[in-house]
Each structure stands twice: as C-alpha cells, then as structure tokens.
Length: 501
Image (cartoon, rainbow, N blue to C red; front, side, top):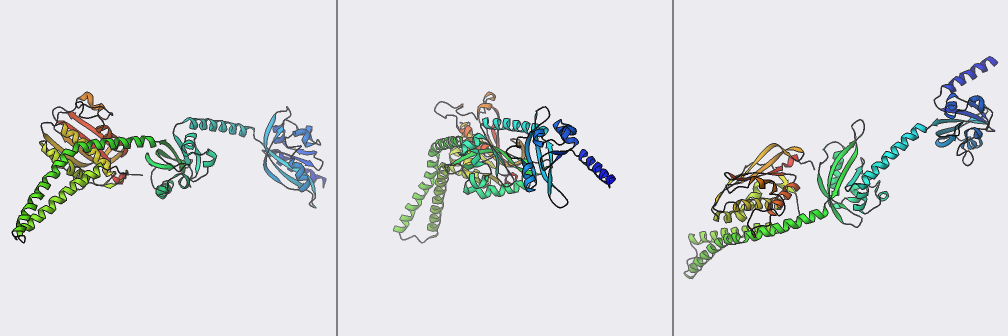
C-alpha cells in the first residue's frame, strides 16, 4: 500500500513540476504544503524554504490582509478565477500575477485546504505599458490635429474621436464614444441614405468614397458642413471591421464661396442685361405689329381669315420666346440651393445659349455647336455648371472684339485622370479664335482677382469661380492657348455610373 502511495505522490509531483504556471497548496492553517518548480522560478524561493510556512509570510501579497481570496476559499469552498494581485519575490521585488484559487476537499467532501495557480504578468504588463504609452502618444497626435478624426465599428458606433471632433460637435468624448454616428450626429434629411451606404460599405459591396461633403449635427442643433476623407479598417484576415474618417469643417468656406458665386452671378446678369433686353425687344416689336394688323382687321370685320390664324400663332410663338428668355435669365440669376442631380450637359448648353446666343451673334461671332447626341448623364448642379459655362463663353466673346468663331463641343473621354483616380468623363470643349492668352499668364488665370482686362472691365473673379465650381463637382479644367489659334477650355466631369458616393 505504501508503494502505491509513493508512486501516486511521485506521479503528482511530476505533474506539478511540468506545469508552466506557479502552483502551491495550503492546509487549513494557511501553511504551504506543496510548491511546484514554476512557483520557485517566479518567487525565487526554493520548495524547502517555504514548506510548512504561512503563505502570507512568503508571498506578502497586496491582498493578504484586506481581501485574501485563499482565506475566503478555505471558509466557503468558493473558487475564484482570473483575479490580479501583486506578490513579492525573495528579493522583495514586486511581481504582478493573475490568480485562480480552488478548495481542496477530502473524500467525504470536507475542506482540508486550498490550491492557488498563478501566472507571472511581468512581461505582459510591460507590453501593456508599451501599448498604453503608444496609445497615449497616438491620442496626443490626434488631439493636436486640426481635423476631425472619427472611427466607427461595424454597427456605426463611435470607437474613437479626437479633440477637434469633440469641439465641432460640442460634446466631451465620454458623451460621444459608443453612440451611433448616424442616429446622433447626422441630420435626419440624409440619415437613412448615409446609413444605407454605410451598410453596403461594411458588406464590401461598395468602395469608400475618397472624398465627399455632408452636414453633421452639433449639440446646439446647428448643421456644419464637413469635407471627409475615408478608409476602411480591416483585421489580419482582411475582413472589414469598421471605418476611419478625417474631416475638415468647411462651413465658413462654403458660405464664402456661395457669396462669391452670387456676386459673380450678379455681375454676369448685369453684363447680359443689354443683350437680353435687345433680344426680348425684337419679338415684342413683332407682337405689336401683328396686334395692330389684327385690330385693323377687327375694324374691317375681316378677322375670320387664314392670315389672322397665322398672325395669332406668330404672336403665341413670339410670346413664348420672350417668356423662355426671361425664365432662363431668372433661373440663372436666382440664388438657389446646391442640388446635385443627373443632368444631360447638352441641356445646360442649350439653356445657356437661350440667354446669350443672340447677344454673341450681334458681336459678329459665329456660334458652332458640335454636341454629341448620346451623352451619358453626369451628376451636377445644373445652375452652377451653367454659370461656369456662361463665364467661359463671355470671356471667349470678349477675346474676339472683331468677331470670330466660338465652338462648343461635347464628347466622352475614356480613362481621364481626375484627381487621384482614372475615370470616364463627359468632356466639354469651348474654343474661340480670339487673341489668345500669353504663356506666362496661363498658370494665373484661376487666381482670384487676376485679370488681363482693362480697368473697369472686370475684377478677375470669373475664372476663379469657374475653377471652384468644377473642383466642387470633382472634375477638372484645362486650358490650351496661343495667339494664332485662340483658346480652348476643356472641362471634364465624371459620368454618373462612375460615382461611388
């Protein structure tokens, strides 16, 4: 029987020695009854030094006196797992450990002692401290960044936001973290649209929009316009786990741009007024002639004739023409909210020439339209693109004081580079046979207040406004010019099927 006990004890000692974690047992008086090899390595005490000694005199844990888990286990038999404590090794050095305690019972289920398994957390704690240090550094970098930084998880909940983001929204970070971005900080008018897009993005059905603008809702209920740059966050396997976005508050800039657009538009309206008045005056004069003829026939009781019908139809057509010209001018001059919608660029060109076509023709300028009849749609603001075309066309007319040819061409260009992407685009070329632009001025044309016109003829905002409009539509504009052939402005606007946002 003694041989069997010795074999069992040796077998148990071998198991305990092979364990990676430290292990010791105590009896009901808290005396150490076993101490494995890993416990020796962690504490620096040899087994012979600790056997039959009180555990708290050896380990000197920070919870020995106040919250001793071993004592509680001895009293209640309750097991406790994965709690942290600090012990001291033989030299008095503090060692962080993770501990699990369990009761030891006799064959009749009586508590006869307790077992404690513990792991040295020193290396892990170093890693945690390093991670915490790196996190704090990253947080400092994010805090000083003058852009909004926001990270969202798969459900659209905010997992990170920097100081700038808190300032713009008007909250402390602890009031924001964990909230759903779309439910709390996106205006209701676009909430469902952005939610739907985000769900498709997380599912991998669409790519993140490299750049887009949308309003956010602050604590005071104010809407601020933010220009966002976005990317998806992925785990080691390549699965999408959220998004990271940086945003710039462009509210004031947008207001300034809107005012600049309005000022330039009013200047263009003033420039057009004389020509439009002349164009409207012609059909009105014709209407007056036909009315006098009809009155004369009325006096002669000769109204019911074929000529009368033709004259009335002519009055109707000329009246509609006047109405159309005035409507186009009013639409152009009206300050409207920016609204992107699918547009046929040929329709914008036709509306533009409805206003200024006659005036340009009076200046001995021949208009040539080479419009592709099957253009794909582009997503733009009709009014702003019309203003851009108007400004370029009027500039072209001024470059031909002695008359010339003005040609506007539309086509599709494959694989054009716009910004950082390669896209298919609708191309609009506006060419004149005017005096051309000196090479040294080409790079300055889109600079605000730069002008080559005589004093009093312009303030140099027209082409700056054009450039701003095209950039806001994520397009591009180029210029080719020389004194012999004149100037060509080329505008590229992405086809609607290519839009990702």
